[in-house]
Length: 327
Image 1 (cartoon, helix red, strand yellow):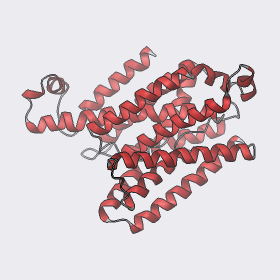
Image 2 (cartoon, helix red, strand yellow):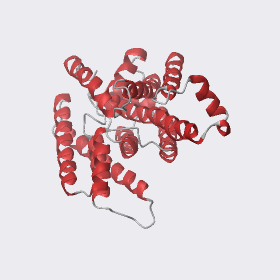
Image 3 (cartoon, one colour):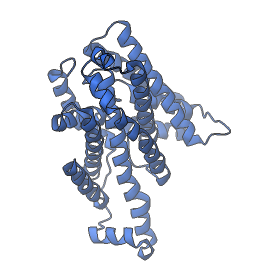
Image 4 (cartoon, helix red, strand yellow):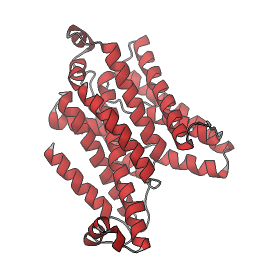
């Protein structure tokens, strides 16, 4: 854990100094410690771009990986993640619905309404997948196919929305479809940090019961665990984390799939260690992807969702061939 945390700090620091402005490490540290000494341009680069950008990468990566780790346990499916099972796509559909139809609620800020719609659609998709899997005692492969069907269905509706959207709404929809950290702001960082700070202790507190569930539902019940209640609240947390991440940065794939697998390779199946490790690894993976997005094409910031897809697709293929039910 200490090594992961050290790597995460190093990646975060390198992400901060990566960019086209040519600002060095010493200049960056001085600007963070003494912002009053900065020119307006340098202050904007550090405080309005670099710091929110890098922090959002950590928070979104942690959220998606933790959601993926819980998903793989409660659905007993090593290929489950907010992206592969369509939860992220459903959240994007919820956000798109608010944007395209200009929905408003008098007592709720617009950004919060987008997040609420994303959460409602995400939670509904998780409940639907769970119900379908129990209805037919679906295998791991069937769950993945159901998730793929959900992804295509949600994406098709979003594409339809793009045809009828106004120019401003269309720009937002394109942003959501590729996944980008470019619109990170301190307000969004604060909201996601609060959500993660609330959900993370609840997830870690359930780690012992999640470990029992990992050994099988009957084994967990024999230990006196209320599996229905455990699964319900876990799905609630998964939906909240996925929806908040999608609402702020768009659809970013494969972090929630790959992060938990790396964590289990490092610390084993005990969820008391696997869940925290998944959280750190997810943050590290998206931070590294953020660095790559700013360096792969000089002078151009590639949407981070493209980077994670290019890296994640081959990893996903490997996991499909290696996965076994119950693993």
